[in-house]
Structures are given as C-alpha cells and as structure tokens.
Length: 127
Image (cartoon, rainbow, N blue to C red; front, side, top):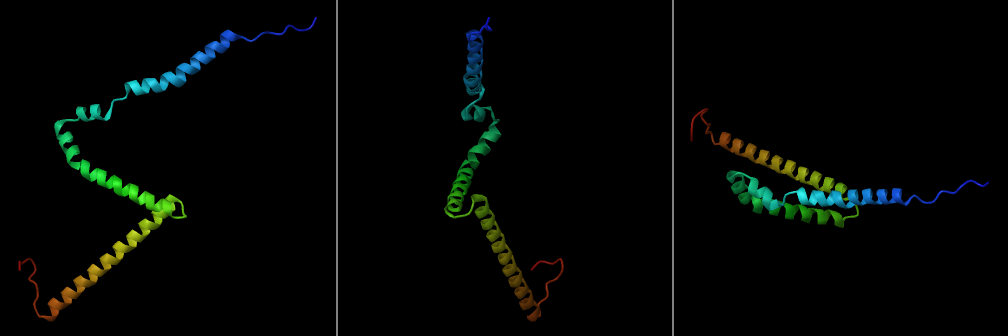
C-alpha cells in the first residue's frame, strides 16, 4: 500500500493566522491606546515647568527651523549629509578661531596704546 497522504491541518493554520493578526494589529493598537498625547503630557507638568516650556517654545521652534534649513543646504551638495555637516562645522570653528585671533590682536593694540600713553592701570583699582 502506498503511504497515506495527510491533508492540510487547517486548525493549525487558523491558529497561526489568528496569533499573527493579534501580534501585528493588536500590538500597535495597544501602543496607540496606551501612549499619552502631547497635551496630556504637558498637563502633567508642574506649573513652573509649564511656564518655562511656554517661554522657550518660540526659541525651540526657531532652532528647529534653522536645523531644517541647514539640512536642506547640506542635501543640495553632492556629498553625504554628515560629510557636508562636518565641513560646515569645521568652517564654523575656523571662523571662531580667526575671530578670537582678531580680538586678541585688538586687545594687544589697546594694551600697547595704554602703555605708550604712560597711563598704567592700578592693580585692584577702579578707573
């Protein structure tokens, strides 16, 4: 006699499909149902934090807008965004260094002018 061919186990497949549906649909639905909205989180703050958050909101929005503008500029170049950001950061650092060097030169000139005029500041005294 030939071996007996088993049929498809529809009960097993039904259980597997039901378990998959519970995981794939029920999991995100549970997370959506449990997570609080931004308004609910804001209302849970103490009044001092609410006040500070409202005061800093405009500055945070401006910072985010500047961040998005920089990302748009970086994306226009042929380089990857992180490489363009690193280049911009290095240019910014060089600009700060040159600015500090100019300030140091200016301070040295002021000191030289004071010394050449013969006026010496008194240590610990006020002018």
